[in-house]
Length: 391
Image (cartoon, rainbow, N blue to C red; front, side):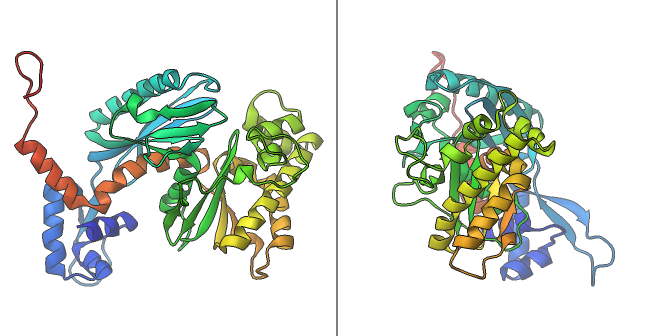
């Protein structure tokens, strides 16, 4: 069943015959599996194959646009967001609110996030979509339990139990990791399975994808690119060290160097587009610092590409020349090319979309388990007793 759902997630105009050819099963076997998935509401039929195909036209299959869905939520330093995606990964409803979260108690921030999540969940219900899980993106280090934020310096959080505030089905993930997964799933990069994804807002994060899988490291903290020292005698960083990449290429450092006091990233891009000398100089320095940090990652990991995503993607026209120049000078593999540094097409929405889709991927990866669990819930419904208790 997983082979069938994953084949349908990967392409369009699929029929029972094309799925059978793609996954290496007989057409009869695939037909039986498809019938079960249709009955479970995970697939739908779109009608006859378009004219021009060889042989008898088959019925086109697609993942259902109702039923199981994924709820994603994002905690930023200056915003909160939530969205619901269907099995295809399409965003069906989305909400965002400005919020000054730095220094606020985690409980207060998460209470506001819960309201936003309830809003989009209600909208999804009207579309006959039911989230099967929630993934929350945070700018910080996440514990191995995937429910606790161990440390998020730019929020001022320590040991924040996110799942306790948002529910037991909540999973917490570092925002850079979710941005990388979104690139893997929706980025449109042909056969890109080994890459470093770098993004930034207040801080700078990176994630490493190896052979199509997220590399987390021994304790789950892989990717802290923002705290790689690029100039050891440089400014003091929030982590306590000197000269970290974040002090040159983080959003606050960029805004300060460019003299931008309002509008943050978009205003910086607008200033650079008009040729403002301070903005251009700040971005050039940041690009060079980013290139120095990334050259170490490229030499160590030998990825196919570096993907620049998140808000950094909006500044790519002015950052990437410096990045590419430093990589060309420092990467030992002389086959490395400037075009191996690419800009994400997902931009700021990558993290949130990756969060939501990661929640519903479990259904695609193991549809049989989801179907069995649904049957068990139907056979053993929870009833409310006279006193309001469960029976």
